[in-house]
Length: 378
Image: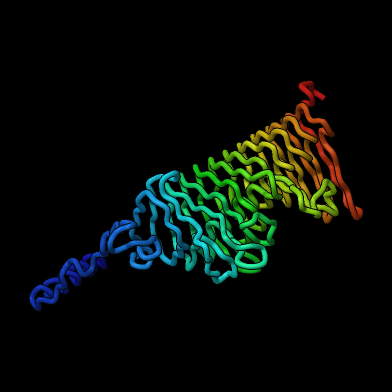
């Protein structure tokens, strides 16, 4: 007996019986409803949050040009599209409501929502201070949520007055410690004028792919550009600038063992850092663990173009030009090895390579192809 023929005959019998009994349900009851477009502002949806609350998963929300002074919390799969980052802005309200993570954020995603946001700006500043109501983040991603952000801007993420608050004012904050994850694809966007860091990715389950973004700190307070901490992802073709220690910041300084340094890109094992332009940062790239960098252009770094600490690193075809030093290898917890493969280092005022060793551990730098210093092979 042919099993396929038997199943087909059984299915045909069931179909004929259903027709005879009139038991077919209307076709529309089994088909999912097509996505709707909700327009803000409108009579039905005067605010962004009202549209988010009314939307079904998968719906699209269109934001007309204007300034929307409100917090937005998203728990479902949605698409939000503005009229352009220079025309549509979600602005921090005067009084921020604290989220489940204890932070005040302008836009928050959680509950494993998959959210697409494009062609709009998220902006501060917040009206709080370090002591009360500090702005936690421009966009917050937690609870396994995922953000696809493109052709957007996140700017002025800072308190009033500007101050170095702990865990405060990161433009985009993904995941958390000790628990909490999120993920993001961020591309073709501008992240500027933040008080803490531009994009921060935290925790082993968190991931971010960052492509063709402009990430710019400001010159009056200590900032970092992009941070991956125990997270994974890829930073490619981004332009990251103006991140360094600023006064007042008593913990900052050039000693890798007792002081803090700030970087354009800080990354760890599991992160690919390639084809970025890093300009005017204290450290261009600060790496930990086991990782590779390639084809990055790093200019005018205050301390070093790249610093690699406690692990095994390969830098391939990076270019370091100007600034205080070339490459630093730091060993503070394990032996550190740094391999420079066709890395060009030119016109630095300090050491082309330098090792920092502590506590019985060793740091080693090897060169696989003639490096260049001040325009001449070494």
